[in-house]
Length: 256
Image (cartoon, rainbow, N blue to C red; front, side, top):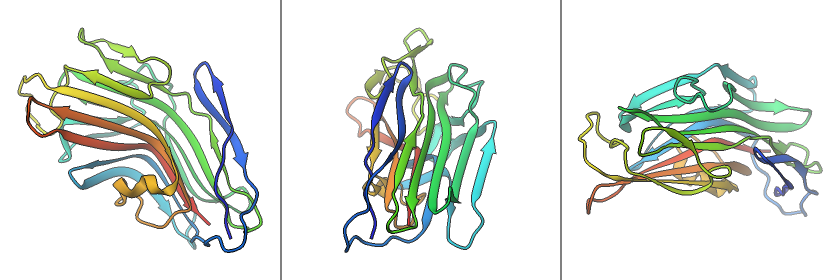
């Protein structure tokens, strides 16, 4: 018998800081979930194909703890025209020097935990065109059916986008919402074609395990809880079909 999550929000000048929140145990009959935790710096799905940088813990294994100053994914077959950079000071000097940290496993007594610290920058032939961070989140699923689940968020979110003059400019507030750029190379072509295409950036929060459906290759198990920041980058050239890049940033999921 397990519980759903609730949260209490406290807004600071730097963005939303989410204190740990707990709820009472659920009534009898609530499904029991397997012990599992996945912590992800990012996951990306394009045209049904998925990549990401994630770590998953399963029962019987040692907790997984990863930390690095930066992770440069670069260009891949899913985005040959763009580079993906995690906590890279050169690509995103505007963001805090946080590094990339992922933890998945049992911690703090009877909790299965998914902790993640990450920021991301996307680059094309002109340099960075998007920088977003710092995500700092924790999800805890209690193994004890009479215990409590909790989440915590001490993120200091900021979004920087490249303007028409080539400068990185901070978006209002924490960047959540919809933004439009006109000077970004095609993400699906390794060679810039110089065409003027519209690039739409949308940032949204997300909670509940159902948000993971788009990125099942990175979150392949059954989870009780999930959260993360959903970044959708849509590119369109004239009347051609749009190309949609669906990111989950700082995604975490657990079950117990």
